[in-house]
Image (cartoon, rainbow, N blue to C red; front, top):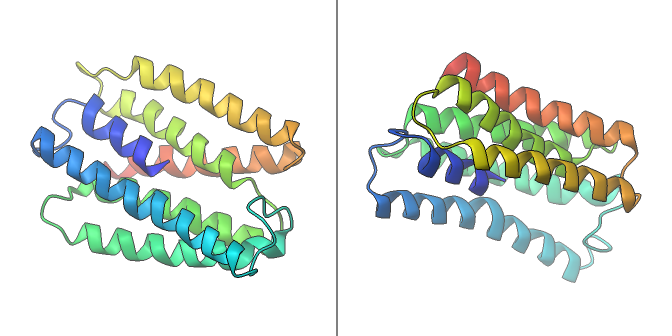
Length: 189
């Protein structure tokens, strides 16, 4: 989801960054590698070394170690990126709020199985909705909003259809992701 959030922010909001087109693409690639490729690699490594049973992680205890590693990794990535000259305060708020969602999901998982998928897509939706409010003039956020609404519905429906989550777990993930991301930008950008 961070890749989609930063794509929306960097390529659909006028003057969101003073980076060149190539610079924005490089940032997007960096975000993709550090928040998607490496976490997927960690989960696959845990699966092949039998730390987790499978990719579905149906049991809460299967999620503890992968979520903890990914949380630590997000903290590290957020810290390192926030130290870069090109990383604006707005980008820092976005990354910190996504890291907060990941850490919160991790902590809640020790007590209850919250939907990380719902938290992720709802976070993106929350960002887009608040971006339309904060960056109101001349931005092309209509299609990202339509896609985010559709993707949020599809992801939550599929998690329920596959019996991966109960409705309350999906709703809690949605509320967590949406509220943290929406309110962070609204309050700090």
